[in-house]
Length: 95
Image (cartoon, rainbow, N blue to C red; front, side, top):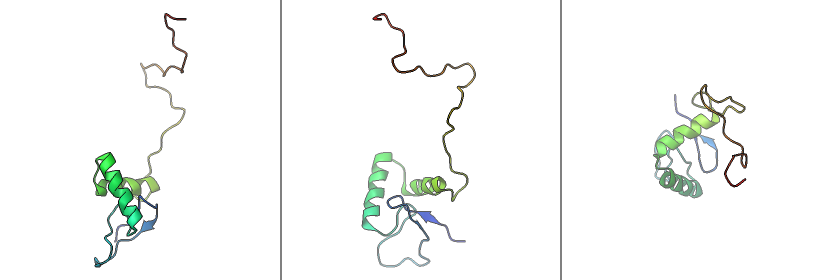
């Protein structure tokens, strides 16, 4: 079974070629478009992650590798911890 890749640059889902061709290179994180390659190079430099890891995270985000992780809104704080204070709601000496 061939893996399915997701391009980080343009968010397309694609299959890698069976035989590598002499054309533009394709990786697990980007398709063959030059703009997408530049976007992934910049993402690798900024994040410090490899192209393979970015490709894995992109596949997980669209739901191809397991369930995508989404934040749980309205979650109560853990036992023994206080909730975050509201902005401007702190008590200070200057009031």
